[in-house]
Amino acid sequence: MLDKMPVASILRPPSLEAFQAIQVNIFNDFLHNTYEEWLSLSNLVKFWDCLPKYSLSQVEQNRMRSKDGQLPVYRKEFRFMESDYCMFITPAFLSIENGRTYAFYPSANEELVEDALRRIATLQNQCFFDKKEANCGITFTIHQLRNELKKQGHSRSCQEVVKSLLILARAGIEIHAKNAGGKGFTIEKYIRLEGFISNTDLNNSESWFVAYFIPLFIKP
Image 1: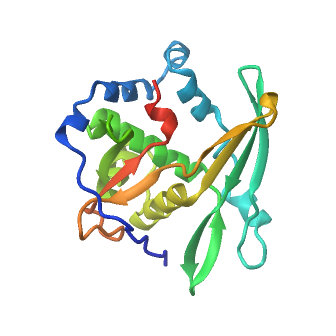
Image 2: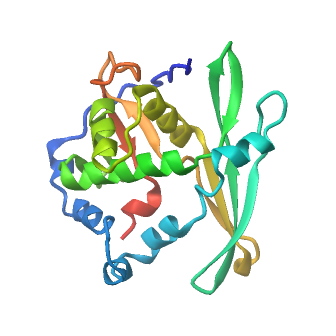
C-alpha cells in the first residue's frame, strides 16, 4: 500500500483574480498537434518538453534497483538547440509494502499524468497565475485526473494515479549547461503538490489539490 503524503501546510485556495490572469493563456500553447504549432512555443517550454526526463522505463528501473529497492542519482547527457547539457534525476522514495521504501524515477506513467494536468488546465479552465506570489498551476481532484487520463485512452486506478503524483512531487531534477563551464540550475521537483482544505486526503478521489508547475512555465 502506498504511503500517505502529509500536507505540510494547508494553503488558501487561489484567488479568483489568479484564475483570470492573462498569463494563463500561455497554457493554450502546451497542447500542440502540428510541427508549426510546436515551433510557436517559447524556448523555455520547448526545453522542458525535450528533456529526456521520463526516459527510464519501469523494466530498466527494476534492473537498476539494489536488493533493498534503492536507485542511484541518474545522470544523462543530452543536446538541445546546439548546446550540450547534463541532467541529474534524484529518485522519489515511496513506502510500497511492508513498510519498505522503494525508489522510483519518473517514467512514462508520470509523463501521462503531467500531460493530463496540462489538459485539465487548458480545457477545464482550472489554471491560475498569481503574479504576486509568482505561482502558476491548477486545481484538480484525483477523480478529474483519472477521467482526463481515460479520455486520452490511458485508464488508471486511483492508486496508480496517486503513485504517479507522489513520484512527480518527490523526484528532483538538476540540469547543468556543459557549454557554460558546468553552470546549472535546479528545479527542485517536477511539480509541487499541496492541498488547500483541512481534510485533503490523497485516498479521497474528491479531495481538491493544487499542482504548482515548474518555474519554466511562468517565465515570459
